Length: 87
Image (tube, rainbow, N blue to C red; front, side, top):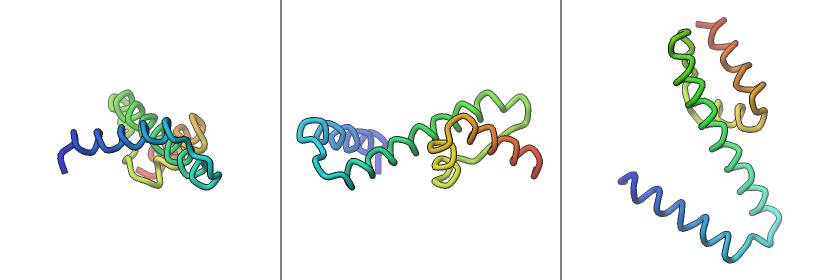
């Protein structure tokens, strides 16, 4: 699938949720969790971009993005420490 199509579909879904709203709590809960996972992936991207000089590289997958998204900066630091000590 083309990246532009994926971004357009995600933007359309976000716009639809903003217009219609998510009255059901489970849908809202899943949406908030998905947003946290995306924010965690962005945290990991910046960690990899800035930590490249120090030799820190944490792979961006659903598990690491979830850990860094739900735990925030301490989760990113923990993943970096685990990567540093294991590798």
